Image (cartoon, rainbow, N blue to C red; front, side, top):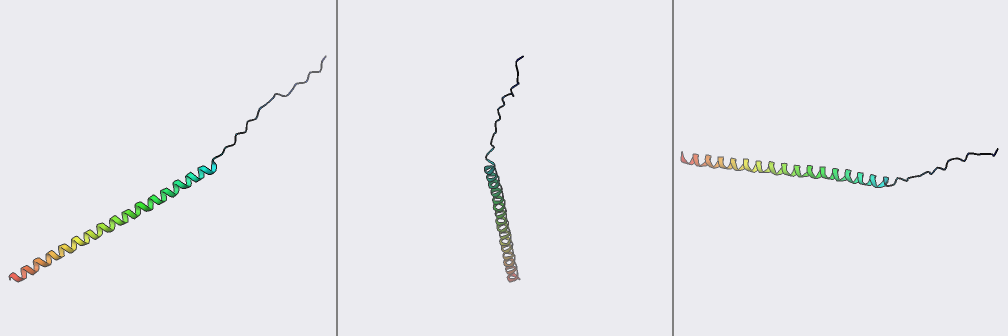
Length: 79
């Protein structure tokens, strides 16, 4: 009989190299920085709006006080 020797099956191994891990981190970092900057910008705008509203209220109150004083002055002259 003939010597029969089984040959191992030929296999092909494919190695895929995954890249872009650094780019994903950079994009994530950029998103976080933009979110933090937007938060502070909106917070700053809200503070400015509140300050303007408060100042307008104080000016309105001062005008009302001046009007009351003028009425009192006119009323005291008429007596």
